[in-house]
Image (cartoon, rainbow, N blue to C red):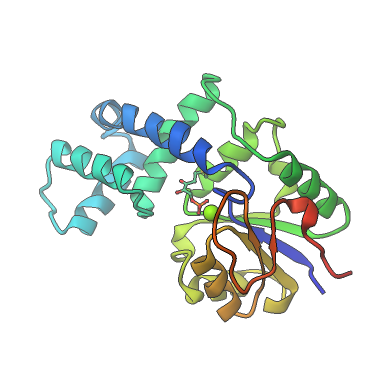
Length: 225
Ligand SMILES: CSCCC(=O)C(=O)COP(=O)(O)O
Ligand SMILES: [Mg+2]
């Protein structure tokens, strides 16, 4: 019996193009100015130090840090300090109403229904928890954050590793088989299944099917009572 839903964002609740054509370019455009103006802000300093550790250069200049971040954005790296900084930059965009968070109508409808029916809803995305709260907090449907009981990001582990899902199971009051993980990415679904979760693949665009149950929209997801 499913008691909790764990959902991916990009390609699952939300359009890939919103992330790649709106969010990533916005962060790319503002990253240099943001780092230069905010590097003494404690939360930003913490991320800069983490980047220095990651690249193995404790004396890296701000210029090197900026170039590294821009390269990571261009190559879609799911690196925790990059994701934290992107979230901080997106906050300005959402607050200035430069964009709202894209969420598919069927995702909004079914997440609302599932929560109403007593299922606990959680998010697991490579975007930081702060960025997850922004996309749902400033969504096309208004503030959706009350739908979710909890959020997980790469601090719990990478999305294609079974250990990350084992860590999530450990953090939740459910048995692995009571959790349904929704994602468009087969490697993530395989990792979740290896940890014992149930899975559904969202095929929003023209991805190849896999051995996981699949659906084109949340409307087609059947949850056994
Ligand atoms: C929180 S919206 C931005 C998502 C993001 O930064 C990303 O890299 C996509 O990750 P996902 O795990 O949702 O595919
Ligand atoms: Mg995805």
